[in-house]
Image (cartoon, rainbow, N blue to C red):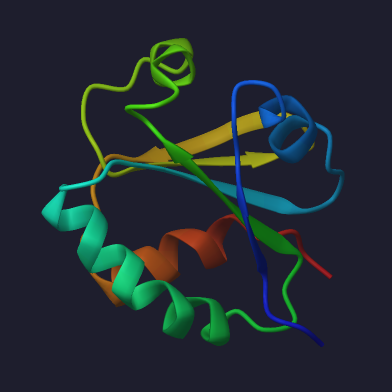
Length: 114
C-alpha cells in the first residue's frame, strides 16, 4: 500500500479535492507561512503519513492567507487548523497541532473502517 497523498488546494479545486472523494478521510490542513506551529506540523508530516500507510486518506493543504475565503467558509480563527471530512461531510476539527500521538489518535478515530 502507499502513503496517504498530500495535495495543495485553492478556492477553485477545494470542493473536488475535499468534498468529492468517497469512502476516504480527507484531512484539510489550514496553514500559513511564518506560523511556528504550522512549521512544527510540516516537519512532522512525512513521519505522520508513514504511520498511516495503507489507510484510505489524503491530506489537503490550504494556505489560509492566500485563500482567506476558505478559512472564512469554515469559521477558522487560527492556524494551524485541521478539518476532517468523509463523503463530503465535516466530521471534526482540530484547532492546533498538539503533537504526534494526539494527532494520530484523532485521525485514526475518523478513518473509514475496512
